[in-house]
Amino acid sequence: MPKDSVFKALADPNRRKILQLLKKVDALTVGEIAKEFDISQPSVSDHLKVLRNADLVYFEKRGQFVYYYLNTTVVDDIVAYFMNIINTAKEV
Image (cartoon, rainbow, N blue to C red; front, top):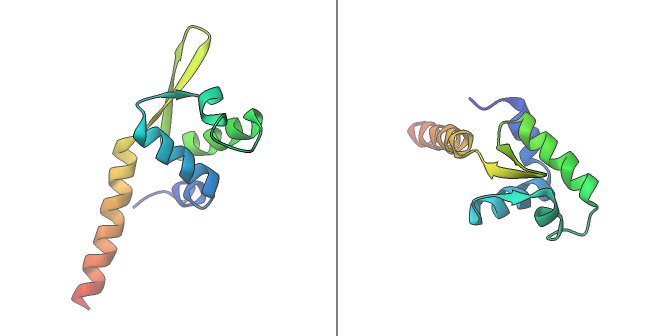
């Protein structure tokens, strides 16, 4: 079962949009992500921190840049969790 932090992270539309961006592209920097939003770069960093705490994204430092990636393992776990709920509901 996913942690509560995953549901908290997914509750915000900006964080869901970040996940969608990372799904389309292998890796993005905070600056590249921020270009897609009408919020400040520090706010994007705060959203990424919540996503990291939920293990939905991970990062890698390359020189002076930090690249963010979608953690597909946790996303797969979430999908499996909801599929289990759906399948259980069908059995009732």
